[in-house]
Amino acid sequence: MKRLATPFVLLAACLSAPALAQTSCQPGTYAAPDGDFVVLVPLPSIPAPGLRYLFRDGRRGATTDATAPLACSNDGVMIGGATWKPIVFRETPATFNSVGTKLSGVLIEPPTADPKRPLVVMVHGSERNSPIGGVYGYAMAAQGISVFVYDKRGTGASEGEYTQNFELLAADAAQALGQARSMTPGRAGRAGFFGGSQGGWVAPRAATLTKADFVAVGFGLVASPIEEDREQLVSEVRAAGQGDEAVQLVNRLSSATGKLLLSNFTAGYDELDAVRRDMAGKAWAATIAGEHSGAMLRMSNDELRRVGRARFDNLELIWDYDALAALKKLDAPLLWVLAGEDREAPIETTRGALLGLAKGGRPVDVYLFPDTDHGMFEFRTNADGSRSGTRITDGYLKLLGDWIKGTARGPYGRAEHLTKSVSPR
Image (cartoon, rainbow, N blue to C red):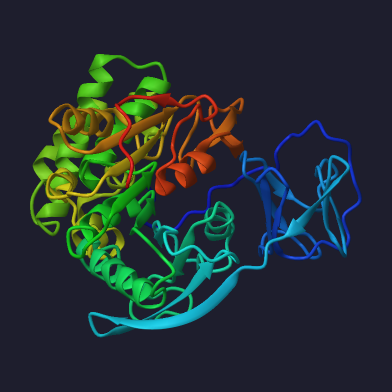
């Protein structure tokens, strides 16, 4: 999970539907009679009048794409010869205070009244952009869930300094849930969190700071940021066809850079020099990255002493964060969805930790979507080994909605259910 915001470049989905002209689409969420939906929102990366579209089954693209499977009119959106009608959500802006900082959010409520409707607080990942007005909040609300979306401190309309301090972000998320509950008296039942990517560190911790009825996580980690770096390095050398010797070297590299980070760049140089010597002349060593170790490997010790902390450790990150300890304190039911081929947040340690918790009797529900990368994206592999995302995998969005509502039954696309079902009641 990139700690410095790096947008995931998603190419428009390659769809088989015939091209339809797109000139008059309006932002909104449009529903079919059978409950299917599509969300249309503006994005800076899509030139006007184009909008991002997202279907419940994960197809994504721009309304101006030649292959866009929809056409817009004043009455709604035409899909497959049928008109999908707009859903008129109730949207209420709000501000709330957390640790001396004013944060901004929006409550999105489905139009029909339901005092037992679940309420979910969306805990953002590491990005600096605002999630308010994005596709995911509306995709959740379109499934009959009240959604509170807020800007993290130092982003969007929220005050404060941008940080990646999980403890502080968890305190903010806990306050966000309190704010959301105060706005829905008599209009919501159980309430909890959804966290994506970095939110997988934050949401479970937030649920130990306030009463939460459930926690759902997508493509997060039960590992520290240092462990994440190590697993990324191992994944990279394995993908490059290297064997155990290379794995041992990158493990040593991550150990050395971890020592640098934990000591505020005062210790670890001898270990780093030793692994540099052993990696010398190995072509693959010039391309490994991890989260931070590749860059440190290629900097001189003098550079690391002078600017290492400013470059790598300026966001209050808790490098040895014990994510498993937070989960062991969690009483609420937990859903965790893994991306089977996640390069940014490799799943080996996380899957083992989650299955261990489930075996020990903790209320943990684990699903894995094969052949997906970070963000639950299906992808194609390019000639240089890089990946281009094509779509969100079918079943992921519906699984989140159903599980939060307590109605998860499956199947959900190609998802593999790794544990016995647990859901909020």
